[in-house]
Amino acid sequence: MQEIVNTISGLIWEPVLIYLALGTGLFFSITTRFVQVRMFREMIHLLFSGKESDRGISSFQALAVSLSGRVGVGNIAGVAAAIGIGGPGAVFWMWIVAFLGSATAYIESALGQIYKEEDEGQFRGGPAYYFEKALGQKWYAWLFALSTIVAVGVLLPTVQSNSIGNAAELAFGGGGMLQTGFGDISYTKFAAAVIAVAFLGIIVFGGVKRIAHFTQIVVPFMALGYILMALVIIGIHITELPGIIALIFTDAFSPMAGVGAAVGWGVKRGIYSNEAGQGSGPHAASAAEVQHPAQQGLVQAFSVYIDTLFVCSATAFMILITNQYYVTGVDTAVSGGVLPTDVIANGPAFTQYALESVMGGFGKVFVAVALLFFAFTPFLAYYSIAETNVAYIRRTFRFPGELTILKFVLLGSVFYGTVRTADLAWGLGDIGVGIMAWLNIVGILILFFMGKPAIKALKDYEAQRKAGVENYTFDPKALDIKNADFWENRD
Image (cartoon, rainbow, N blue to C red; front, top):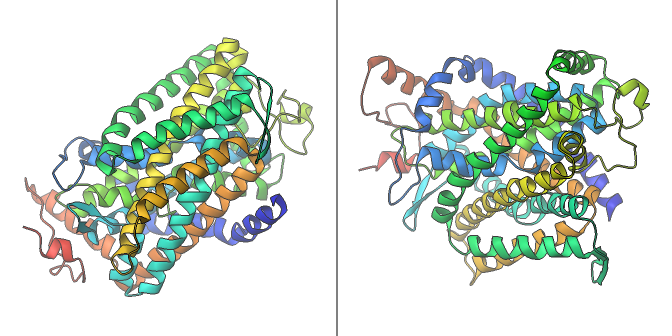
């Protein structure tokens, strides 16, 4: 099973996809005139200006829902894996993919807003919707929808839940072994799986609105608490910070594990963490109640900064500044890390040891609890995304109990991932991310050359903003944007 997963993941994550993701981010940065820099203040303003309605959630709620998918174990375990396999220089490439990916996030999320629909009293949208309406290719939309349901309903949850189980076992010990159909697993992992599934079940049988209200409280709290803890550790080692920053930059171009490994793992884990270009962000963006599609595109662009430049950087600095890491295939005397190579790199161990080196046993427990939140909220985002794509397919083909089946499949995937090995879980997750990224990036590039709808929306918004309007409007027909039915028929 592990060999099959590794082979498939390797084919999907060929260097072509890695450089396609970087190139696409650079391309959209140029075509938007670096919207991620020019409109930074506007992004902050828009975060708190939108309001919730009966049909849609607020801009901040949409940000929280999308962040609940972005701010996950990729920020803790993913950064550790990038450093452990790609070297400290991989952190630099995570920053690059975040900066460039912010422009990609604007494009895909603005598209989600432009082509959204009202379905059963709530807004829905995403790549499947804009591929059908803007590309005019229903088969491609179905391909993305089905791939996404499998990715977020089956493959990606295994990574999040696996880190919960590994962190709990490292913090509290195994507690003995239990013989199950999945093989021998520790009592701690089994208990973590049961707790995660029980809490997740309570939430997912609520709905998108409940998910939005839950995440808008939990996500800011957990991200802020984690960053504050990181700042404490960095503050204790503040004199070493300049050297760590220098190490990241110098290793990015002459890295210990080779340039290819640093770029590859930096980009791979960067996309896994911030999801820019993956096509998941537009689902939450489409659910927002806004006056103009560009507004939610800008809000989602800002979420990439929060995820990678803040949270991922906090993890990287903690690991590197305490030397609690190793680089695969490189002597520790060269890399500077002090951890033995029998510590699993594809997991949260580096981060837990970094915290433990400063705070003792509390450090491991803190990461285990943080991972419960960091992994739990992505489950909610995954379900929301899967539900949206099921709703898309349901417009053409219905069968009884499809959402109930989806919920139980997600819960089963969470349980399975919690008790399985880290390499298998991350391999499955990489397949899910890679498939979505391939389909979405290729699709939005084609859309750009077909009509530039997201660019037209940005120019229209900037023109109204320059004119000083109080209430923004969006007229797709005036901009020669076709099939934006919601906006054409809006009250």
